Length: 467
Length: 127
Image (cartoon, rainbow over all chains, first blue to last red; front, side, top):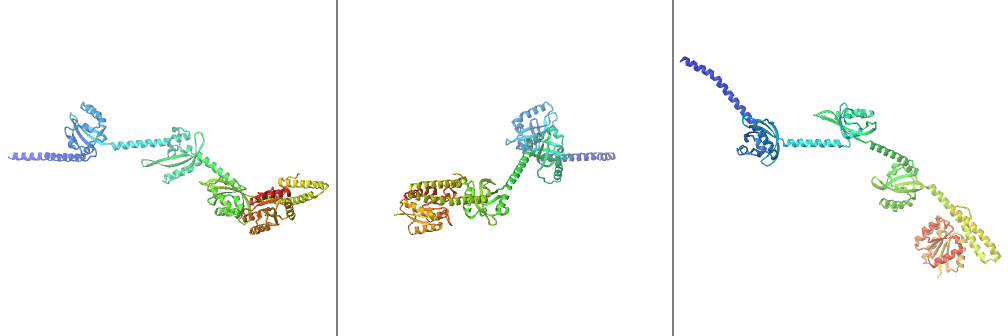
């Protein structure tokens, strides 16, 4: 009895820990199963188990991806090929054959799936055979359609960017903090005459003119500080020693959020600079010629002087500023003002056919002196609009000389021709009443008067002294 | 009815000779003489107002005071149909041209002589 009691005690003490351990283990297994179940049910990836060509299990993500209910998919009559797009069916069949023959097949592959709505999706699958001696496969399937589209778009974008860079007429390049070239495009290679490999072994300092290095470095420092910089001109030397003027702008070159150097875009502006210089030179010459002209030169548009040269100020006595402000027609003497105003108006309205080649008119200086001017107008396009380019010279001295000459001619005519005419008038009257011997003498007198008349006419009309 | 001629000429001898040669040509004309430009314009105006407008005006160029060009302009301003002819020694000068521009129908050079002048006047009056 006592022994039986001790046996019972001993058995209890022996079994209790075992039962307790088994109970704990069972509880742990249940907890893990519950955990796995939660993971599978909430996974974003589609998870399935296929056994002998039909689905044993699919998770909600699988249902969502293909649009079928779990019950439909797991029905024994559901043909799993319905989930495979026609173009991938051979691949899946082949994998099934190889698997059934016990051959090794890649556990990870891609195929095109088809949803219940007929939409084709690109999927990536990872499979593992969990059957013991039979084909039972668990798979994790991920829809990579969007990712692949994004990758494709990125690849296309990179291709486009690469083409743009390569085909750009501007030089595009990058360099590290030591100035060593990291990349160069075709325009740089062609422009500088170095090979691409050669350039990539060089530094920016090898091509930039020493005079421009300080400003180059100052610019890089500003970029590193985060300042925005405007394009800057530099002189660079090509392989054959020829100098070019380029306009370049650099920006930070970033890699994984960290600045590793600079990338830059450069344009050859040598020709533009040459043309600008030629234009400046031409303008300088034009300005010198215009400013030192003995004639007044002006541009008239919209009833105002748009330009007057220095000579205009000496001709009129007004300063340039005064001339630019005043009514140009107020310079013209009232006797000529209206006529010139009308001509100017017509010309500026496009009636160029009636534009006089030259005009003589009197003008009034600032001090009130009235003088004569000759104006030669021409039509120009000034700032996109029709304008008159005037060239005026003071002809007061010429006019005075002409007046003097005119007076001389008039006086000569008056004082010579009138008496001659009167003499001849009376001579003919006397001649008719004279006897023949007197007429002979009067004829000689008439001849003498006629000679004098010829001499005077030649002086007056031709400026020549002869009969 | 005789034609009316106004001769504007400062030289008395010229005035006399014009009258003699016109008379010689048997032209039936009534001659009025003015010795300055101002007088000529005034006389033309008076005759016009009396309804006796001159048929022809003979105009010299160089006159004391108002010259022939100015006198021509003034007469033409009064009467745009005035028949003004220059009779001047300045026949080949700009001044003669100015006279034409001022409204003179023609300029007769004094070199044609008084017979030539009288013949020309006869033709003018017959036009």
